[in-house]
Image 1: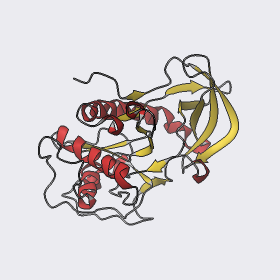
Image 2: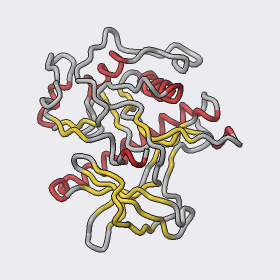
Image 3: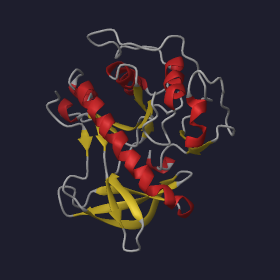
Image 4: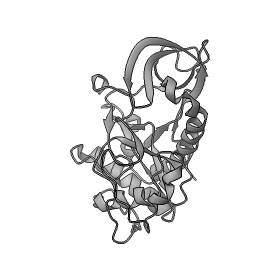
Length: 270
C-alpha cells in the first residue's frame, strides 16, 4: 500500500479567475490561462480547459471518463512510486469542474510549464527525451504488468520537475493520460487491444523496466496505427475494429477518429 498519494490536485483552492489568454487548443478543446483565488494554490497559475461550442454536448461524458482515467492512473502511479528513486516518482493531475457565470464548464488544474509529450495512446513513443522519456515508457509497461495485461496507462505528457536542492522535490508531473484497456472502459481515448498492441510493437525494454521481477508483455504485438504523437479518439460505434482479431489497419486521415493536437498547450509554453 502506498504511503502517499500520487494525485496532483487543486488542493483547497475552489475558485479561479479565467483570463482571456489562450494557452492553446486541440481539435475539440481550448485551454485558457487562469489564476487560483484562495486556498493552498492562491495566486498560482491554472490551466482551464473547455470544449469548443460544437463539442459541448459531450462534456459531461468526457469529464466522467477523465476522472475515471485519472483515478486509475493515480492508483498505478502510487505502486510505481513505492519502488523507484525519489526523483522518478510520478504525480498525476486531477482537476475539478468549474462553471463560469455564463454556464460554461471548465476543467481546472494546476498549469504545467516546460511541457513535454512522452507517449501517445496509439503507440508513438518519444525517443529523443533521454532518461525521463525512458522512465515514462517503462511506466506504461509497468501498468500492463500490474494490471495482469488488462490495460496500459499511456498518452503520458507533462514534465519532469527538477529541483537541484532536493531530490525529494524532483518528480514527474503528468496531465491528461489515457488508458487503453481490453474491455474498453475508459472513454473515447481508449483504443482497446490495438492500443496496447501498438505500444508494445514500439517498446523496447530499458533500464527502468523489470524492477525486482520480469514484467509481462504481449507476444508478437503489431503496430495498428500510424506513428503520431497526437491523442486519438475513437467512436464507440467502431469499437469492434479495436480488437486484435479484427485485421483493420488505420492510416492518418482514415482512423474514424477525432485526432487532437498534443494536448491543449501551444509550443510557446514548452
